[in-house]
Image: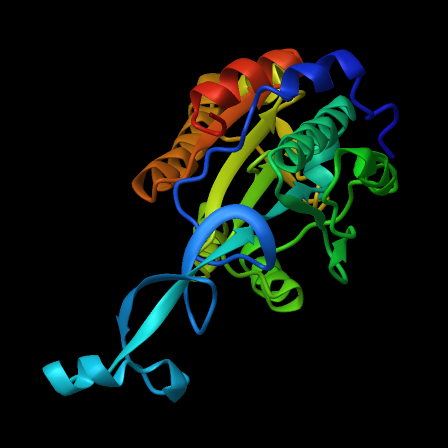
Length: 295
């Protein structure tokens, strides 16, 4: 179980200067926010016309325009909505290896991202990537509610394994995620095909995604972890005898991360690698900022 994951006040004051980068907003879940979107129906400010599709309210049809064009259009209106931000934190067994400090840092990073989102007038919820039933926090909308997220995170203990694609499919159905942003904090130690599938499921729901990969220097240079030519999968317990050199193992780890990064680049998803040897402050104010997480 992670300890002392609360963020200090000095760092929180620095985070006040950051805002989540938002490329587009197609849906919002509550009115009263700062993002204007076009919606069918009625509101105060007229925005534009949209082609009529079955299921639209016939009261929104502009009959005068129909008389001139012989085509059906409905009116859309401006509505100010609040952006929903889902922070997914990897709580599988690999996050506790090779040191528990990795999971602690991931928790702190997830909390910092949540605080930045709330400071930007978004609403935030955290969910654990873990086996079993979906574990999620309550929605938070104010800075003063950050301690509730801290308490929720401190109850997490990394363990077990998941098929990331299956987990995402189940979780999206439970949370009914649509639109908004999803911020993933994980070590990315999963089959690339499962990662790709999970991201495609999110993209299909018109979600803007950001990926923060948390690793240790030892994982990036795995020769430091080799003992007797055998490795043990922290999530399955299976042992594997190595048939290749330390240099080949290091190259395999690098290629794995590059596969994830290339997929993200191809789909316009910011991807940042944060090593725990870097300070949390530097990771946020330098690494993630440079990778397009914030403005």
